[in-house]
Image (cartoon, rainbow, N blue to C red; front, side, top):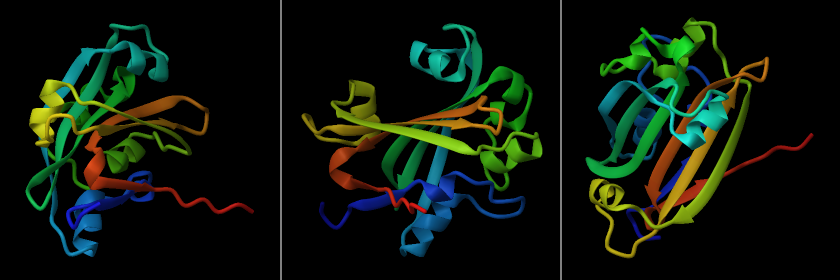
Length: 180
């Protein structure tokens, strides 16, 4: 991994930040002397793709709310992130809109009474499709990492699914687990 590599941890993205604070990505990048930003490219209701429907426990094709973002590091594409919510949680809220959410989406979810207590992440590697390759600026033949994160509330109800695509050669995922 060259000088443009990035070490990513999940923990800053799992708890609400509180109103009035910036977003976790910008803060994490700034702590490493870099600039983190994001561009919301779409927000609103969409038919649930099969994988998302299964994770959220809704029938495939039923409406869900999605926020699609291009994540930037030093103004360069770093990640594509689609975040899905059950429509009964996010429909008609700022989660379904294009504006940035003060304190981030997790803060708004908490304000709406939905707090995640269990997270499951699955990471796979593969080749990007042409749209992903263009958006991320990867070379032909360069693989990507795909991370799917499911967040459940205290009643084991799914409240959020994140589907991320990252250039594999510019990423290192770090998991730190304390036992006992």
